[in-house]
Amino acid sequence: MKEKNKIALLVVVSLGIILIAGQLFLSVRHIETTGSNISSSTAETQPSIPATAVVRFVPSPAEGMATQSGSCWTNSIAAPYRSDAWRCSVGNSISDPCFQIAGSKNLMCGINPEKPSSTETFVLTLTTPLPAPQLVPGGVPNNWAWLIELKDGTLCSPFTGTRPFTAEGDSANYGCAPGPQGNDVLIFGDLDASKATWFATLGTLKESGGDLPTLASSSAVPVAKVWQ
Image (cartoon, rainbow, N blue to C red; front, side, top):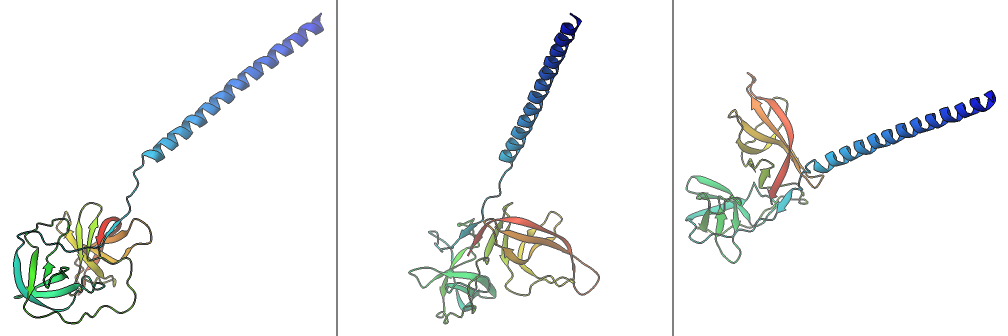
């Protein structure tokens, strides 16, 4: 009789252990599943960076746009890979780039594609014929632009004269709008177009007491749109 009681007790204990183990297993599975769902949900809500839009600019003057007279003596420095882009002058002012208007002998200068009706944009009537195009030799790189729009909407354009250099030997290829402290924001080096979203290396300068300034800050920022 005692032996039967022991056997019964062992069966009850064994069933209890199995029940507890099963509850623990279900709890762990619930935690793992919940954690997986949270991670998946977090990954889904993280914003992705849009691909950079690459636009081939086509000049199209607005009706009633201002007209000025001038001449062009060489291809554009800002858009050196386009045979229809020129460096032109109106009086003592230089416009670069000016684009030839298809089906016309005129050009369009002072262009901001984001503001087609800008008062700085004008049609250029030539006082002398255009010279023969002289483009940059070699292949056309895919990462060039005559106008850049950063992710925050800041516009940057290439330097067509003397470029800023730093004491460390860094060269700025593009100039952007002044930063929050009034410092000029510059793009150093070439644009990184190795992925769908392009990146630009932004930096600001500070005086060093020497002949050249030093690089005060540097960061890689996404490029929203480029015009070629």
